[in-house]
Image (cartoon, rainbow, N blue to C red; front, side):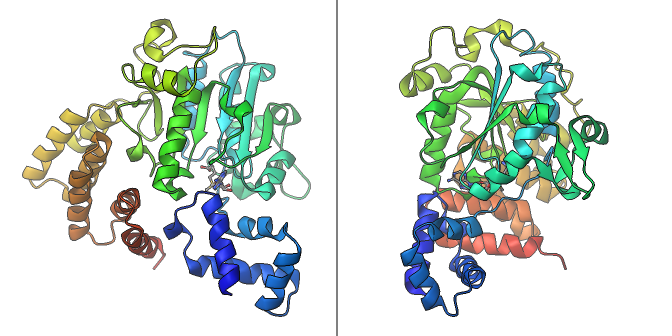
Length: 405
Ligand SMILES: C[S@@+](CC[C@H](N)C(=O)[O-])C[C@H]1O[C@@H](n2cnc3c(N)ncnc32)[C@H](O)[C@@H]1O
């Protein structure tokens, strides 16, 4: 088992995965599954098979990768994309480019295409590139055939427009929509130059960075900064939003979209340092005020009346100092302590004050030991600080907190 376990660990390492998210117990289970699928009587027989067939390495990796995804996941990011496509990007001459990285089974790539098409963009002008390390995921994406549960939060009217029910109870993505999406087998650690040479209006990197080693994640973010068009948006997963560097990126859109655009001041040097722009390509956002959305975005939700919601809205707009001041005030007046502490933790993390963020999450856990979001963020901060033992411990607690009674 040891040699096999070493092989599985090496594969995870090549994928940039943080060791604490793929503990040995998962790897052993994955290897056992492959042994059974291959019909090898013992693990030693399976090890011999791996040595004889190098392609078996890919199959082990497939067992480890988590391809959980669904259409219109979180919904708000897609509402934002439709709004931006009908305002900010409505007069664009060149094709609207989007990248879904990673795309799992294609649900995200098709959701992006639907959201953009719903704003009235012709399908022939949409170019969605979808990449993943999983060949199984890419095969499913290309087939574009889904079980009903994969449709997730896709509104019924959009389902009727873009998917066709089949006799087997599945749903098939409309051929014209499938034609907008190109699939590519790629590792986030070594993105092909043809992909990174493009500038994308929509760059979705959701629910993947949390699984990557901190150094890999930082490198990837730098890469995304240079691939993001001047008027583009980077959309991340909910647990990843607090990790976005506020020096480079500022939030855009409604709460829950977890969307970011270039911050006006810091972007120029970063982009120039990593990749010179082609002439005619959109420049940093600050250079093109005409590309900015109208001041009153139709999708921005009205500020909710509660002070906690007000603080959240301030934080969402990148106004961390007033958000923090409001939260400190709430905490001093014995307001809903846990959620205020959690939000203050997010704000401190966004400001780059990791120690203060840690203190907030820890205080939230002192009040509610199973506060899962605080556990997740503490685990991320621990992993960021290269403390993988603590990250592992916190993730176990978080998984335990999430488990149904
Ligand atoms: C949980 S899914 C997220 C899918 C989608 N972005 C979403 O949010 O619904 C994570 C995906 O990351 C892919 N992945 C993990 N490591 C990768 C890497 N190094 N390069 C490319 N894809 C990777 C997995 O194969 C899996 O499909």
